[in-house]
Image 1 (cartoon, rainbow, N blue to C red):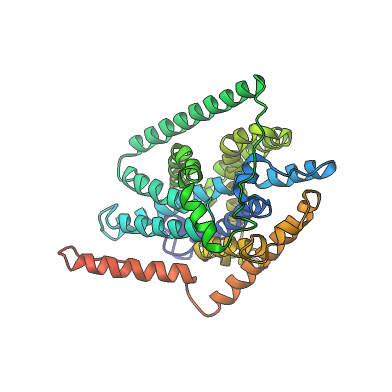
Image 2: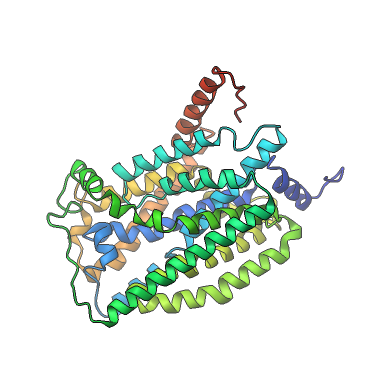
Length: 407
């Protein structure tokens, strides 16, 4: 319980425990995660063969540019995917806490939320970007919502088991790929022909995604155990007080693990290139994400509100769904053949400065858009539609005999 005249730090601690007000660090972290995922995805958009070319490393630049590209890609590779995953887990912990304080059953109507998120992801996958993460988060969130209704001991068991499964799967895959490479597999990957990314219309790219849906959905399936573990870890860190002043030791440990141990290994291995990227993206990067979480949480335990830069990230974080979908749509318009088709005009050796320029343009548009929109509206456009739909479905469910308690 807070004292009668709480200090700003004590007020933040109460907010962290009760969820009664928005924690600045949460919105800032979401904004960083959204623009950070763009830092990974932008290289997919600027590859002439899209996701296929990015995965197969087609049209790599030469000389100093190949090392510059690897360095820049490795700065974002997997870190912000991990951070976004952890933030979803924190969001679930906040929702469960709200339901508990309001006397509502948990997970209650959360499956409706998960279903709507899945539909958002399906829309994003079909019409915007084949590397969508929202569908995977919807399924993961549904599972974790029920896990959070169990005891602390059961939740720890789920976290340890899913983390172990992911580690085992990643080890087997990395070893298998390494052995295959040692046997001299000289097959050369080829770009799709015809290439829907440069030559196809918007609808032809949609059809291409549908035709190769299983291949494009392999990553969410593979990282499903990791996602469950990171969701649960995010919820556990939130309950442990990572955003409270008393959580200094937790934050310090996260920063040591993330920045002093994981980050140097991640960068060194990532610069080697090749299939070792799997080890960094799915093995080391989540630990770097924890360091980022610890650092931002540490900053905002000392401040009552974000400064100018923090407010811009927080605005993107408040409109995370809208900005995630829109930034991919704008990047696709700039790069793909159905839009301006700029990627096909750029040589491999020019791709690094071109990619940086596209990233800065799209990120700037997101920051300005979020700021302008929230000056007039409480929620982003996708968030507003999502909330209105959820309320309609919940109210319809209440007419079947269950009381609706929508917040």
